[in-house]
Length: 109
Image (cartoon, one colour):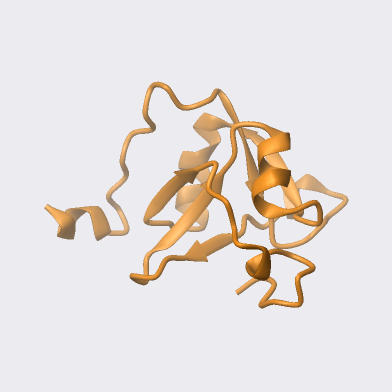
């Protein structure tokens, strides 16, 4: 069962209680939203995770004030999955301060 979850073409439905719009961390600030690149994070077990936040204040609390972001309707996550495949979709996860933008850490990896 875990093997099918790891297949790139396998998609999991978004839970019904998921917010109608989400705030996504981006790799950098851009003036044109079409140039935005969603920031994926690698988990300890090597999977790629898309972090989503249910409100702007949560994104800033969990990722820091310097985190670039964009807001998208939740159905857009399927399109993002096609362009930037990810294994996990995580909601409102706190990023440790040492891994945040502007912390002198790795930035976008």
